[in-house]
Length: 397
Image (cartoon, rainbow, N blue to C red):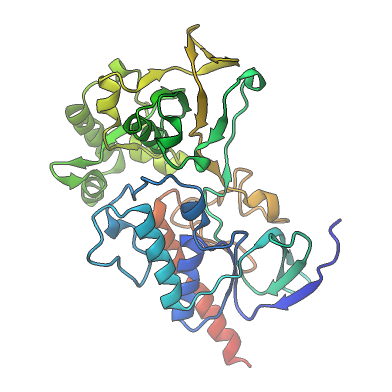
């Protein structure tokens, strides 16, 4: 049992957990409606995933107008696909403009609803001091920690035998440290593909492990962003038909990827994104490097040995280093107690567009599997709903 908190803080408004795009956007929307909030984050900055755990060459994968947060467009001089630094600058400016000042180094360890008091009790430990605990108490709790809170680090037979460094893609910054080295990149999502491309640009020798089927789409078609094409088609056609059109166009633009060792799933790209959170890869040049032989595509890993890995097809590949581009997962089940609003995987049980509101003042932002556009949609709905309850509460005082 946890020791009693050394400090108790009454929050006159919602308690928002997470200071990434989701937490900032809902706090800004609340403030615009005159509702104060307290935003807690375990890191020492806003959007720590973007600032601390992404590679240098990263850009937004979608056009900027699909990634704007409520109430503030991107600067006109930004490119169509803003850089990592530009997006971080945008988020910091967004928080400053809205007057959102998160409380940093506040690692939430538990949150539970006190039915007798009708209040949420959120316990947070000081991530810097390591021992000071604070209990925040309020009527509403907004979960905004997102879909990418914790790294996924799979276990492999023989991993302890491998002689080289093994790191998660969250630690990767650039290929400079890997010049001339053979690098095994585990994962073929957007991060895995882009890391392989970056390694090539730094004269490394990447091999990409493709364990599962994956949809790869061109980033643009006919000079228009593929995502824009999909959004336009969805205005007139059912999702299943749009999926078929996207796959057909991808085959025309990218060719037969089976020859490259990349299989397409049976489900469509939008269907899999909506139902399973499997984001299609938007190609920005990796396929050309695969065709040229600069990036080798290999199947799943059976086990590691000192100098590399044995693959499921019996081949052995040499490697000096391993990078795990294996993604992230939600951590909500680790700290949200006594609520069945979220699944064991950390997503709302009710799917989009209705998974933003639970019971007893519980809300979620950023779990739609629809990126930043889903974040904005949730934030507006949550702020409107809480503002109505806030007005009713204050009118009776």
